Amino acid sequence: MDLSFMTFSRLAFGHWEGQPLYALVELGIPDLLVDKPQTCAALAVALACHPEPLERLLDCSVASKLLDCVDGAYANTVCSDRFMTKDNPESLVHWIRIMDRWKRPWLDLASAVKAGKAVDNQAKWLGEDPAFMQDFILGMHEFASRSGTAFAAALDDVPIVNFVDVGGGAGTYSIALCRERPEVTSVVLDLAPVIEITRQTVARHELQDRISGRVADYRTDTFGTDADALLFSNVLHQENSDVCHSMLRRALAALRPGGTLLVQGYFLAEDRRSPQFATLHNLSALALWDGGRSWTIDDMKSLISDEGFGKPAVLKEENSGFCLLAARKP
Ligand SMILES: C[S@@+](CC[C@H](N)C(=O)[O-])C[C@H]1O[C@@H](n2cnc3c(N)ncnc32)[C@H](O)[C@@H]1O
Image 1 (cartoon, helix red, strand yellow):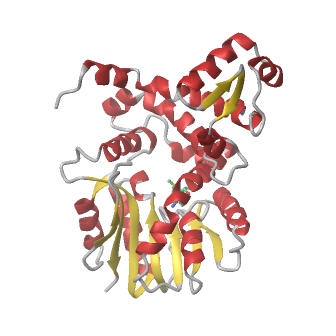
Image 2 (cartoon, helix red, strand yellow):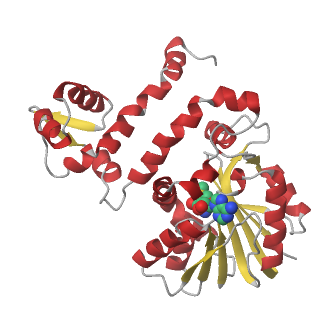
Image 3 (tube, protein in one colour):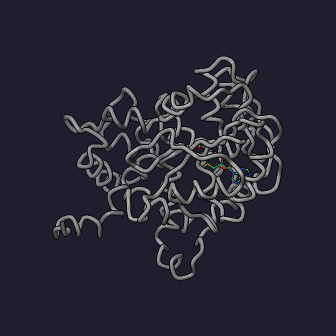
């Protein structure tokens, strides 16, 4: 069915809708409203800003159901309390800040398409901008933690004692697995500045005896030896196919015979035109990561088999295209 004018115009205005969300978090307004509704005048004093433009943001946020307003006092909704305040256990504040930052390369999508390469390679900021790196790593952790339990459950039949989590960030999936499986110990491999955040996150979950962090550049370094399972979660879409092949070869070398390779991420359908989120993810890989792209499940299976693994299987698949693949080392 064709798009109606209303749906079409909503797409054209699409980038407007997230902006109040980003501004609320940047200004820290939901944190100022925890347990305490406030008038615009009081918030303007706290934020040292002019009340009139602030009122426009607050009223638009009410219209977007990000805030409530009762008797002239603005208050958090259940959603803004849960996701937009920094001390809530369900906070997505770092992730929202990353989405805010990533809107900029998206604005240059046409240039990325013309040039066939990223307009602002995010990999370089991991090394050069500590604030970006902190938001990126903690933001991915906030978002990915939601699928940790399902990830661990999908591995129920995979025998694992020694686990390697390549590009594991804050250690999200190692933490999820270790919480469910007392026999597992894990090594998270990531870039030097990231590993410090990994260690802090792991310590917050009191798993420092079972999850260690090791500095490694996954483009060139080895991944250890005798692993029972090795995970690439949300990393291969950041790299070109030569790097992916090399990473899979080094994964094979790191696993024991019979050990399991795990690849998790967003995958396109075979015609590459669905699911819609995966097609957007594929474009974001173009705009954000030099050489990056989303793969189809069959493409990924071929890549894995080409490097000498046994037949890959899908362990878990969601409507969004988020999948977990597994393949055994012979
Ligand atoms: C999208 S995050 C995925 C984090 C985690 N695996 C997950 O699924 O939530 C990508 C991770 O790759 C790491 N990374 C990027 N380039 C890397 C490199 N050259 N060597 C090691 N890790 C790298 C980043 O620091 C980050 O932790």
